[in-house]
Length: 470
Image (cartoon, rainbow, N blue to C red):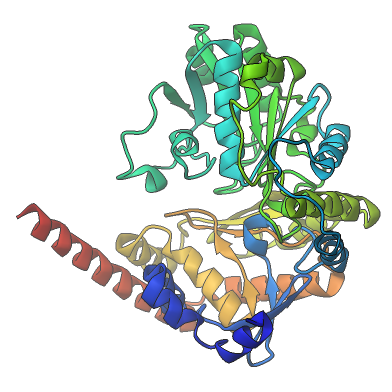
């Protein structure tokens, strides 16, 4: 088999294959909102379809492509590893590349994190963090935040404070306690029994790009120390330069006990995650010879993943992408913030570095208010689709709604974004936000179509539910 020939021969079959063998509902979603493109090439912040149209990718694989797509330095590193015929995954061995990547990570993580555990994904790092914190403290309870997201495997889902992802998958793990994000009083109340193993939180909540008050994370760290609980920082999305610093916790001077990372560490090629933790936690978990393999992951330290991680860190440093992330993100936010005074539906523009959001809310004027209510009655959060879909259809800009039922549009550009890309993004956002405030208008005609489809889907789902009950 020559993979290049196979791809060429069957390049137009991706949607058919997914309809027949994978998640056909995903195909239906893409077709419904007009995102069904046949992408054939990717480079930096761009995607190209089979008609040679270029798209600006402000989704970047949910933050995976911090370096952009197919970065040549990462490609070369992976080719070199494949050509070297190295021993891989011997298991009863300790590999060089995993040691080198761990050494580099210890240099850049917050002070006090001296040990690294490798995994395959963000959700695996969270699972490890939960297990490590329970064993190290001898306690079982885990506190997590309402609205937070930590993954979809059973342990990480138990710490995910979004009912949309949890519904129907219970019962989830016991001893998980939810508190509001940003509420120190609620956190202290949950910690006061001195029976909590850890408090896990994203420094910035990804689903909504919610940035806490300046006192929150330092206060949370202090409370954890006071009551003997560990602080787990989930930096799977926010880490590795995304917010304009190596780690988002640096914005508040916080040093967690455990830090989870993944996504960008892969360079966009090979899944990899890592847990950085304090020496004493590691020593508690792996405390005897017969416990050397008490927790692990078969493919986690594979050579390609480790090489991708090393190349990613090198590119971030050589191209000064973290400083660029801070500078470019601040520039984009500064250019978009004045729109909140001009357009009544646009409530806030916020973000740190290359993690940004536009939040929309119910307008004041009568005609817009009535149209807004129509959309919300059909399906909460539909207005945001009136931003993301025209951005894609008219401006070839790929973006996302920040979470289920949210009127928040989220941008996660590559850290390599250039000035031309910034202008492309700003002009597109200004155009679609302005159009969404014209009633009647093309945007609201599309909104009515979305509302009609949403009502039909609700009716169909309700019919199925009643049929099952009978």
